[in-house]
Length: 126
Image (cartoon, rainbow, N blue to C red):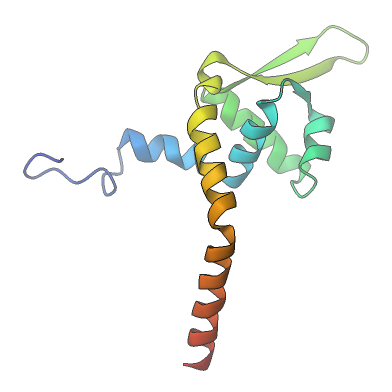
């Protein structure tokens, strides 16, 4: 609960919850974190696993997740150099709550699609 005169967390632009959820709530970040939960992946393997992500967006999302300390990038001294991405210890801590969200989405997807369809039907005829 907010103290008198303070904004609730949902309205506070400096809120740590909003700051973190801006990253985790991004669809690409969620997919990449879920992908890396099975172990390290090279860039090309990640792109094959998430075929609708562009190279630019995959690169940016990897950088953002690395900047936030959720994944690490390891370069191996081969010719040409090989690189893989893996979850950090901090990144591992997001897997349980993320799995809950994924399961919720799977359970309620049909109901949400139905609600969207119903909403669209009503607003299209208005």
